Image 1: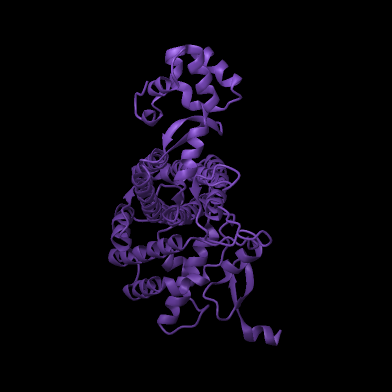
Image 2: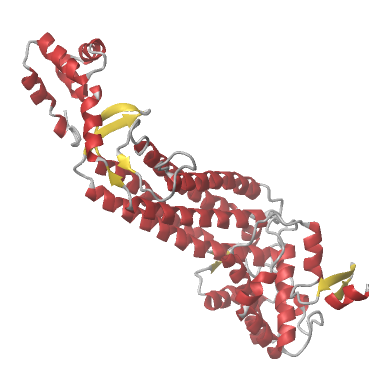
Length: 464
């Protein structure tokens, strides 16, 4: 026990005593949380931690101005909050903790209180600056946690949108580069009618343009925060002036565009805006999955399948097959997208599971929303760099185009669907033989038939 006491300090509250590592900035409430919630390997998003520290800073500023917190105490709290980057390693409660985030709030309160105590000459655990009466003054977990989550989402949203813009612009560059290269379109993985390679890239870019617009617009809904509402949105325990002004002060401290919710009770218990945001993240994940998978298919082979895209050799493809190139980045993006799909189920169900005046699952909602955003930013950036290295195999595109009997589709306007279908079947789906048989059947020359067909014009809008 003597050795233990040298390495640990003892803290006590109304539940009893606990040993705290002597160098730890966290305290007794955090230690209990670590025992209750074993680590899952998940970690809080850094933007979330920063947002939480900024909330504590804003509260200290406003409480000092209102005369409810001594100026000297307020100043030490503010200094501690400004050291968030050094202190963030001590925010150790697992993101998937129970209690609607109370353990996280207490962890942050204790870290700030212990650092502030040090600043004024005290030792950790002495709490000359108190985690409850000073750092948490006029706050509740229920308004600080959700507000920190929304602030972090706003910041990450900008990163996601920037990633989408970057990827969209990269794809549009390829659209222009390969706009005059013809290939065969495919429906249900089978030959369809001709298409420009640039048109394929253009369709991907337009899908991303919708994601860009949707994610830009949804920020308007996530800006509405419940800070000042304390426990259930009524603001109990906080003076009216604090409730009315805390959003303004926080906005100035953090430089994040937030607004006071019109109904703090609603904003405390209903987290549907997170479900809305994540639903749009899922939509982006759907488009990223589709684009990445299309790249895999078009680059498949390359000698025994489609092979129309030349995939960049960014990594050794096999430990046994020499020279193999795999679509590793598209696969990475698709795995991230699948993860986001799973997160969307979690977030949707958790948002729906709130009871009465509080959603107790705010931690899992905030955490997986932010995690999905990081995955999508990484996916957009990785895919953008990969697509820059993509090349098109024009010869393979031409060969695939010329072999497809779907090129004969416009001839149904001259000879009827049944006739053209029967000739193709009789020719064994060989386009050259089908053209010869159809010309012979209709009593016209092959040249005249090809003039009617004009394959080179088939990609134009309204071609008949």
